[in-house]
Length: 168
Image 1 (tube, rainbow, N blue to C red):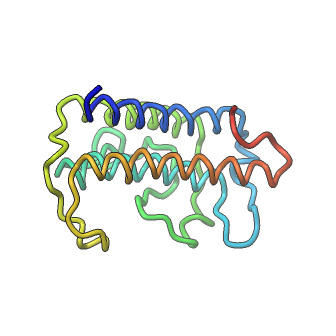
Image 2: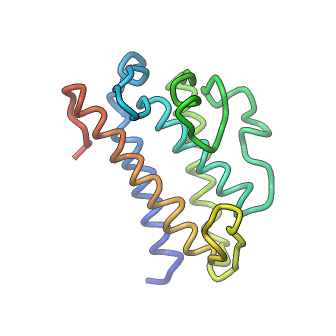
């Protein structure tokens, strides 16, 4: 197995996992305020999809994100921001069916990007406080790792609502 195959499996599982965690979330539950400093499930899920789109296309690929092109106005998010903030998290409204369709397109593009990925290509992430990293590092940590972390956050919030958190 080579590096590309490992990343395909990692990103494939991360995208599958977050979608499984979201599968039984109703719009009411998605927008329920969990209190404290936690984001709503809707905001966390929207952030997962929007930030993956932005990373894959804009940061790593140097081209517009889907939400800036064919998916503009069709993401399901009332406001599109790849960076989550407390204010955005409290105000964003998410149409889950639209967000799920957008997620399918974004996650499919993430998988397709790997088929031709130059994993050793260096990216300058100093603007984000991460120095210079390879594309392989970015895909492993900023895409697969980030999606897995966010799936865990969503599962934890579901648990605080008395629901089964994880899909497994």
